[in-house]
Image (cartoon, rainbow, N blue to C red; front, side):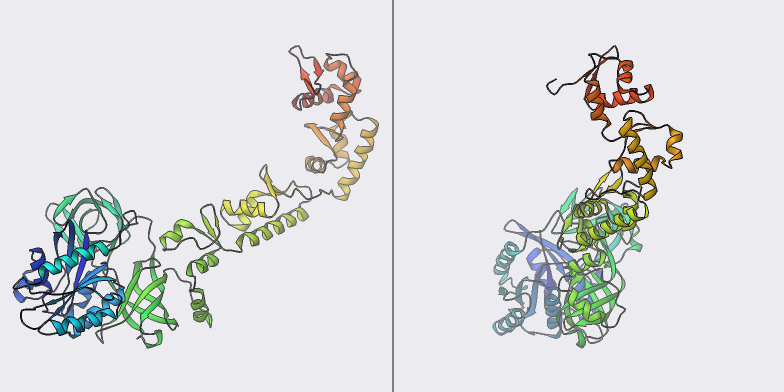
Length: 579
């Protein structure tokens, strides 16, 4: 489906023209028909050459410009109407300025009432005016709704227009701007709007105004559907929300996919920042919201909205001055989640950041979940670690901080194996993937829940060093005689001291409370190789000159290391290199 908005001065025949093209009545209200004046949005449709065209017929009277903008805002194409007998008028200019401000790039010019006056001069003037806007040079047709002249040519141009329109993204997150809300007896709340992207299905859960609701039914062009894909005019029957709670300019949203904002930094298209009044109305989609203007640079301003809106970078809107009945500028949203500006010179600095707002946002936060960037309308601007976009220098800064924390920890806890990983995680307060990357970048590793420095040479406090030297002299005389617990306690060697000495390669614990020298395993194999095989525990104990308290765990350690083999009867043999 192709959705096309009409535009043009009041009483120039917009409704008459779409009625002639579609055979349907766009003026849906009794008052409109009585007065011959479109005062609300009308919707009609037709099929041409296999393509469906839905028309949003907007009011042309100056008093109803906000309604007109609500119809044009979500639409990518326009049918611009100028009457041959009256020519270009004030509202023609305002409607064209609105299309230009919204950045509409596709359209057709129809000069109506060609049976009343020569359409040539009006065609030429209107085409030139339109060519100077975002629409560029558009096809132009002279038509008469009364006689039907020019209608075949107009239909052909509409078909060509449909071929030029970009393909919609049917997988996009849904943001359906509501232009009407009402109730249907037996069905409940119904809202209508133009689905510009994404897909809506019966049973879907959506969010509007912070409230969850469920799609109870769908209609498009008067026909019920289980699923409607963009682009489409759609009526959505909702369960879970009252129509009185909804208004034009609210939006049905994919849950969790959008961020509401009361401020946005934008780039202007039109008048310069300093020329704008400080109080204007921002139009985005079908929403019209009063806003305050804060200049940041010649073409950059911050908009502060009277209420929050679901915006993304790349959204287009316009600023309207109701007092002067003008559209001074359109705008493109650059940053829908801008930082607070407090310090002197902050506006100028912010203008510089807006050259790459996504990168500035990531720098500000250090690390940002990529789903958050998507919700704000940005791609990942630089480095990505797992699902996190990270500031360019963050990995280097984190690695430096990791090294500092580990060094500080060892200085304060000389007996510890390393800095507990949980302590580091708490201190740095970064996602686990970033922490892992920072540890690796720092040349460290995590083992058994602590962060270790492989290049660090363990050192022992002097008191521990002295006690270990005493043990080393003892092991030089009797390598297989382990000191008793009371001997270790008397030497001031508790479990932490022994663990530190073992990490330093000075001792070897073969069991709880059994401490020997670091080369004891090699020495034991050398001694046991002199025994007839197989040998028993008692024979090994006597050969080693030790007690059963030492011999049993020592042999078990040799078994575990694959240096001895234990038989079913408890005897052992040495494993040779070839066995």
